[in-house]
Every structure is written in structure tokens, then in C-alpha cells.
Image 1 (tube, rainbow, N blue to C red):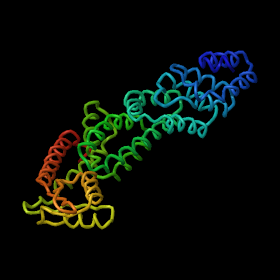
Image 2 (tube, one colour):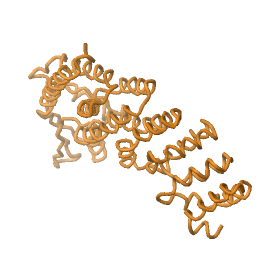
Image 3 (cartoon, helix red, strand yellow):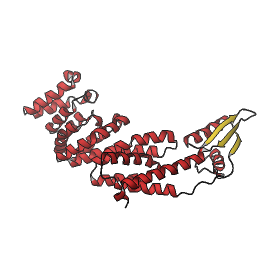
Image 4 (cartoon, helix red, strand yellow):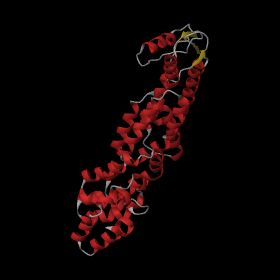
Length: 344
């Protein structure tokens, strides 16, 4: 145990040697002795392949899961497909699901690393698993990756501030294409249906994804192309804002301050609002405006008591709408020229 705690590579080799020698009882007992410290020392670089071989050879589901627990999904590559398929075949789908969930679990959160893994490794890994007659394992990996990615997409599509939201959604476009490539037909349909439930901001991920898919000649994205075309058509069909219409649709937290702010924002004619307001109230209004990405300038006039919060609707209210319409026209034209069959 002391030597194993000092060197996880040595421990795995010892276990493998005992299994190959037919000493399963000794291998299982030795493996179980690692449990108190294995989660802390087990996940050394380059050891997952040996750990998978040992786990499959032990024939003890709980101990095998313990040996694999320290690893994280970003370390799983195409070369591990055979070992993972063997372990999954020995212990079954529920055991495999538990191990995969652990690799994606809270202790292994590293968003950028995960998306790089999806972008660079998931498709090849799933192809190797299917070649090893383990399509169920491939589906578990893709489904778990989608769970993480789908949550991030839903989070960022609901974010109001364009300058923060758009780069994050664009970053997810390439991993999304790779994930769809790695999906089976059933899961690809599930992902596509889920994407339809997101707000229109999801276009900021889907259009870059479709352009990448076109460059990579990736198949299976026709349904997403049709969804984007419908969304873009709806944006183009919206009535053009009148030059005298300064109204802003917005919903606050429900407090009296937000009710007053909402009344000002909803006015078609009122552009400036001078609002005597104490410090805490001004802070709340500032927060609501900034979090909502509203085209409203807020300044404090420090005269009298309480100070006066001066709110001014900006011309960005009009440029946003015209820019969105212009992008929609351009994107829809591109879709119609490159996805003729899908949009027919």
C-alpha cells in the first residue's frame, strides 16, 4: 500500500501482472487496498489505458469502478476505445453509465478543456467504439457531452449582453458540429429538437456551426438549417421600428423600482427620465439596465437630496434592430444558396 500510494503506475502494473498470472483473488484484494487514497493519486497522465485493462480483468464491478473514478473525460482518447469497450461488456450499461457520469462529474469541471475534447477527440473515439461493437458506450459519451453543452447553450442564449454572449456562443459552434457528427440518428434528432426550444439568440451558435459544417462537408444538419431559416425569416418579417418609437420591451424583477423603470422603457415617446432616487435604488436600477443589456444611458446628477438618476434611451435601440435585420437577410441568403435541398 505504501509503495502503491507513492506510485500509481507501479500499482497498476502489479495488478495487471497478478491478473495475467491468474491470481484474481490477490489482484482484487490488492486493488481494494488502494481505495483509501486512489482517488487522490490514481489519475496520473498516461495511465487510463492500463487502468481500463485492469478494471476489465478484475471481474469485480465496484473495485473496477473505483480504479477508474479519478480520471476525467478529457483524458479519454480513441486509443482507449478497446479497453473501455471490454470493461463495458463485462460489467454492463448501468456500470458504464456510472463511470462515464463520474468522468463528467462536478470534480472534473473544466469547460474549455471539455469543448476541446469534443472538438478534437469525441468523433474518433465514438467511431472506434462502434468498430469495437460498443455503440451504447459511444451514445453514453455523446449524450453526456450534450448534457453539459446544452446547459451552457441555454445559459448563454438567455444572456442579454451581446458583447459577452456572442463570443461564448460562437465558441460552442465547432464542438456542436463535432458532437452532431459523433451522434447516432436518434440522439441527433434529440439534440435538434432541444435546440428548437432555445431562444433566437441560439442563431449566434447555429449559423457559425452551419458554416463550419459546410466547410467540413458534415452531414446531418439539414433540420438545424431549416430551423435557422424559419427563425431568420421571422426576424426579417418583423415590422420596421418607426422613427418615433422609443419603446423597449423589458421585464424586471417585479419590485416597485422595476415597475417604474418598465413604465419609462415601455413609453413610445419618452426618451429621458429624471428620477430622484437614493443610492440603493440607483444601484438596483443600474444593475437591471446593465444586466438586461438595455440601450439606456444612466447618469447621476449629484445635486440636491436624493441625487437624481438621469436615464436616456440611446440611438442603439434603432441600430440594433436594423443590424439584426441586415444579418438575418445575409444569413438567410447564404442558407438558401448552400442548403438548397434542405430548405426545399
